[in-house]
Image 1: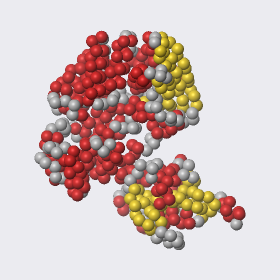
Image 2: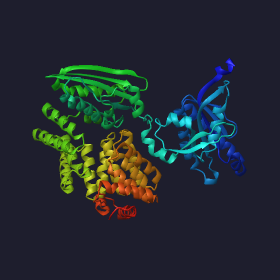
Image 3: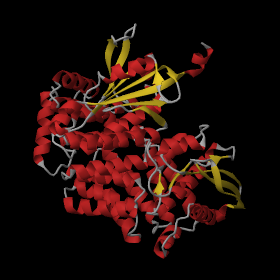
Image 4: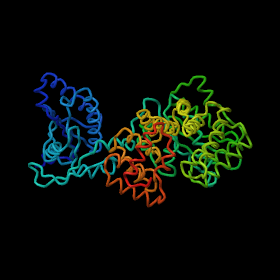
Amino acid sequence: MNEERAKRKLSGILSADAVGYSRLMGIDESGTVKRIKEYRRLIADLIEQYRGRVVDAPGDNLLAEFASVVDATDCALKIQEELKIKNTEFSDDRKMEFRIGINLGDIIDDGERIYGDGVNIASRIEGLADRGGICVSGSVFDQIDDKLPLDYEFLGEQKVKNIKNPVRVYRINLESEAAFAFERAPELPDKPSIAVLPFENMSGDPEQEYFSDGLTEEIITGLSKIPHLFVIARNSTFTYKNKPVKVQQVSRELGVKYVLEGSVRSAGERVRITAQLIDGTSEQHLWAERYDRQIKDIFAIQDDITKQIIVAMQVKLTEGEQARLYAKETDNLEVYLGFLKATEYFIKMTKDNNILARQKYEEVIDLEPEYAAAHSALAATYYVEPYFGWTDSPQHSMAKAFEHAQKSLTIDSTNAWAHAIMGGCYLVMRQWEKAIAEGVRAVALGPNMADTHALFALTLKSVGRINEALATIEKAIRLNPMAPEWYLHELATNYRLQGRYDVAIAILKKNLERNPDYMMSRLNLTLTYSMADKLDQARAMAQEVLRKIPDFSSEKFMKGFPYKDQKIIDDIIDHLLRAGLPP
């Protein structure tokens, strides 16, 4: 009895089985045997990759054990993803698809095999899965529900052969799983990757916060110019501000190898800055430095930190890249600090703060008229106004945005943000080719700037290049994993335009969970439900829109969307009307 107890343990069990294997053997015996061996080898490799072990693989079945059901579920998702790709080579009647069942249960382990009810339940649950699908038991669901943002369908309590009590079973909706990919921990890029955490303000004065935040942003901006690096956007790294987080957690959640953290203490004319670069996958400290200087030396300190990061990550720059990286648009400390203060207002993204940011940027330009970054930033304060409804004259706002973006580029033609805003302005003006050209230039000059990719995705979508738009907004989300609502709105819109309505609906519902007041998600959901012939849901959502916007007009609403193809606009209006929204 004691020996048997010693062999018992709680494990995650994955059971996989090929669907219609006998039928496939009847069609092509030798080809099917060859493919089952290839597919089982692929599955076994993935199980090992996700820290599991194959314990049995008879015929067309495969049984595996995991210490973690999160690992088991992630592995199952990857298996189905890889097999789906492999099956694209075959007609529907020759596809080799697997069902997968996962259970968390007590097992008996004799070293080579595992036995017990936990194994039997996994095998029975697998039989309830769809072709190419995954089902999990209630014990697994309870462990993964708050860890893996998937879409689950409860199949009820199922009677399982040879098991006394019914078992709760959940099906994972793999279409929605694709939609939630942006919420899962991303994989490491194939180039040196880094997240710069907000430098801590050690001055004891909240009024100095803009300086520590500004230093962080300047380092991110500098690193973002280097095409050999992968740099996480400010929006995502600043979600960790004033939170006790571990470097390994940041590395895992943002999908980067390196993490930079530091602190700033300023007093009078003196500043003390500490910085350290850490390998987030191993927690090894690669470089650390403390700078005790006069505040006027801030430019030299920034350059040195950036240089040391690049050296530590073993990145080699061309002479042109070095010149661009270390070029300074201003050496005037007053101008620089004014720019940081203006940016602190702008990033808060409220109407009042946008006005304050504009005033500060204008003051900076009065002091230094040829400051390209200030002109592009000033352009941005005008560019965002129509999208947030902060202006009574969208035409005037766009004209001012265009004016200052153009001025920025006459000073510095390599300003990626200015090119992105120019592209957005040309899109509003329906100058399609110029909008595309500016977007191409923006992402080339700012390969790590998430917003330039997101704006370019909007242009690509508007001219009908949907597949490219989807890939581009996904790149923006990878650079900015804690993506703002409008990124996800664009992601869902592209899925909708591809006719993948379930995926679009899942993203929009998740977006509304994050921000119930984001009306674009409600409008997009109304439209997508209508296009998917889910009219009850479409009409219910339309009523929600009208409660918030009583004077809503479908035709007036669509005037703000510069689609090149008028048919898309007409189709959208028709479906909004079908949902019950007024013309």
